[in-house]
Image 1: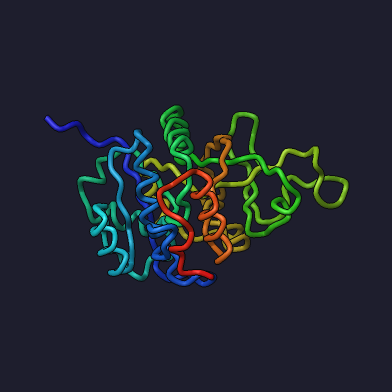
Image 2: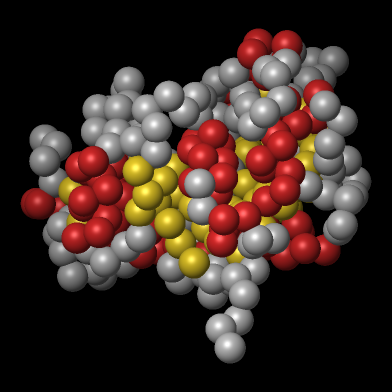
Length: 264
């Protein structure tokens, strides 16, 4: 008898991107961003299945071409979480899976151990409905960058708040090297039942103000468990990020070289 699935990873993959159009189909040393992300996530042995949820026929066909699983979702999905919920709601077998992990499509070097720790944190506490990783911020530039989402957390790891501004603040203005700052990594482990509920909840003031959908979870009184990880993952948002990951690939002695990039 086939063992029931316990954890499914879903990669929301939207084709359009404001800062870097069609970035998921950009080749990095011979493989596209989405293919590298998919194959990298497969290294996490705690995932029983892995699916790409996309609004793009091009991405759908591309994922199928390299042997991955993909579902076509509506263009009306507001965000990646809605895309996950749509895939689950349209597939009764997935509704029986206890846990779902949302893995960003533009993070091809996310360490499998990060996904593993997210899953472990979710399973460890019945009262927690969401888990997510954070990593220490090591530079002032990163701490002050509004594109870097910061997190403050309780002693037990529960998230207190997420913000694009510098938190925690200090009596002294600006960045303080001795203050522990954490960067949020956009991976989420969900209890499947809660994920389907969450997407039906109306938007909240802090969520809209910060443009951070995880704040809606906190505003409705649910717990988010954070896990501290040591991660060097690079998200791809700008053309310069492509060069960064190509350099990292070459450093790791991969079989490809950066000459294959479409970017100058």
